[in-house]
Length: 279
Image (cartoon, rainbow, N blue to C red; front, side):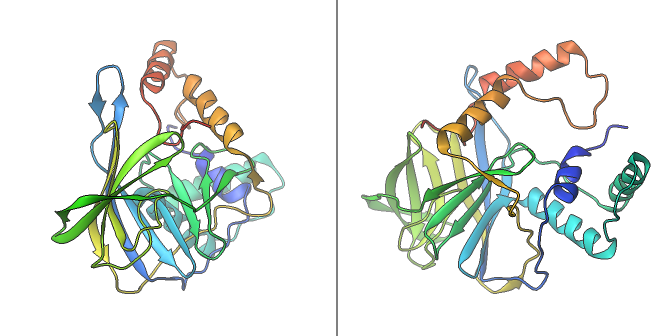
């Protein structure tokens, strides 16, 4: 059965995720993310939608598909309590119930970023599933240089600035008309909402597509608990590179042909993942 199982197992059986179903997002921003898929042939992905949620003193950035899946899983966990598994059969029965009851969407770029404006820390959760969950923390301190000129995005006047992060140089467009200190991915620290970010090679582009400044309910799970493992940037990047060089096969797919495995490995070697910055 070609089903995605291990991600569900990690979500349910290795982490004590907490849920506040009454969480209120002060703002919700949707972005399209376009990234290079092959640095040899210079090909790019189709747009992938991300969402930025500001909840209290934190903001959370993830794919819309991740948000949808997490919401569906947390609703399931509220309606079906997890039993105390005493056999493999009981575990499999519960997994089958999850697969039957929980609709999920495919996730291409599982970047998960938490900005804590109270502690001034950014947390990046490792995009490939691991046990325990692994994450990296960094300071929110960014050095921005302003660039002359005004552009327009979503009908809003935008100023331009640039900064460096993880060995790369980025340009950002922000608007004073939405006075929110935040933006896509790890970016923040400007006197207005960041609507667009592009690296200097043009490999990665985040562009805002919808801005909701009204408060709305948000169903968000905690990705990190007391069993999670904090790692430094060097370890974080090395683990990402290790996966890139030897990617696992699609979850739940049995008897994956060797030629398909080599194709997958070749594809991963050609692309340059956003989170694999220098250290």
